[in-house]
Image 1: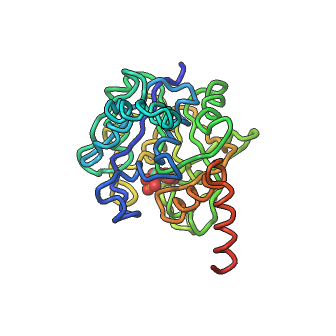
Image 2: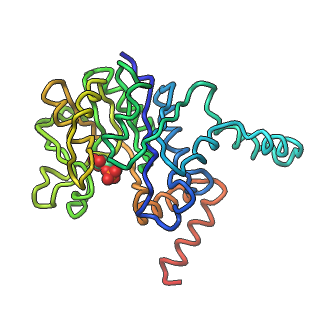
Image 3: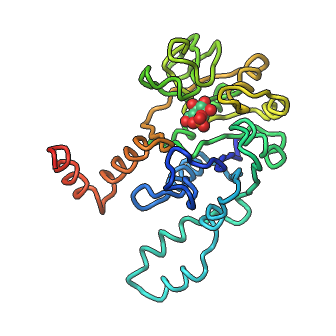
Length: 291
Ligand code: G1P
């Protein structure tokens, strides 16, 4: 069955980048001239997804407004021919009518709980989960690569990428068993293991294609790492019942949940943007040389 819906959990407080996120959703922090979330939504749409379910929370109303019509802004930009390009950029952010749903996670109980909150909107079909903290630069998009793999093997597919060993304890980590190209069979996965207990250095990137059976497992999933209901723990149980693959995607990942990752995303995109590329190179050179 084709993957038509994606869940984007956007309820998190962004504590790692406070106070910047005190009154702005972290997902709307700019990466050059677009919010981080726009890159992620573009990735999702490029994979053929038709409906996005945002799992929001208190203080995240700006996300709904961002994807909506902004009548007054569009009207005033349209008055000036010099603003035609900006108007196009603004209009591009609108999601088609009926293509987005918003539901709320009322308490920060964990990623597993956030995904569970989308269960009635997803219904009985396979779906994607995409974590907006993570921007992936890839062609085809990371999720598109996963959908192509899923179309061949079915079951459940999660994206993974290698991480330096000293950082494994910040992520979900897989235990690889065998490999066929970029597709990896697993014998297990574990959420935020201590470095010495990590089964590999392949971390879960934050991109998932899951069968709807995950919902009944999430329903009674107990608390795991960090005292939170973890998606990884429910996936371990699903793996006992269904085919489950990891996919080592081709591309570059930026974990904007951390200060350094966010900075790297900004630098990488500034070096790519036609308006900023040249200046960004000169600025980097200047500071790399010591000011
Ligand atoms: C979540 C997942 C983790 C994954 C990570 C990717 O953790 O639980 O398995 O590796 O995203 O960024 P979080 O960053 O929400 O703590």
